[in-house]
Length: 188
Image (cartoon, rainbow, N blue to C red; front, side, top):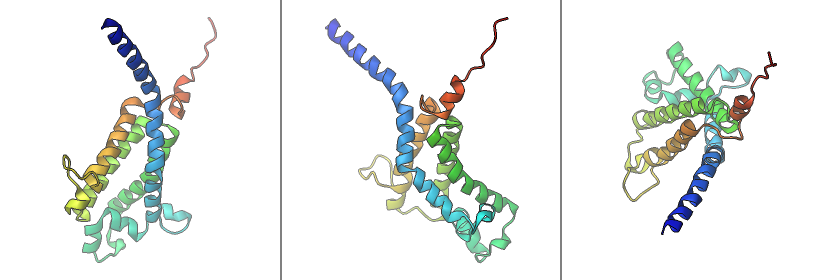
């Protein structure tokens, strides 16, 4: 029996060690394969025309981020102030910058934290701003339907991002390159 326990421990210690190396890289791959284009395409819908569109968001940006407030002002964006503009521009840029940082593995833990915050705000906006409270869209935990857009799917997103917060980007990342660059000191 001890031999069996020792074999079990040896096998799973090896798997755990490999997992520490593989999981962060796999998490970044899964993010790139499933969510990168989702966020980038969403960000593109918020840009205004031309290069200056980076600083002049489309009305769609305001309608996605401030739906009820935009409706209240008759869809006249000029009624919004600097605060609204800053939130929309920051949210739009975040949809491009944070996913890029995750994929290349630069400032991964901070980018993953930022993405978690983004997903939480996105979900709250969907629920309260876009009335995403119908049961099919909202979903419910601990039920037999795993396809609710807000509670079910985004829980997986946050779990994936939490793994990157906890483990970092892994060995194949810009973070690892920067961490491994140590200044060479001449002997005294």
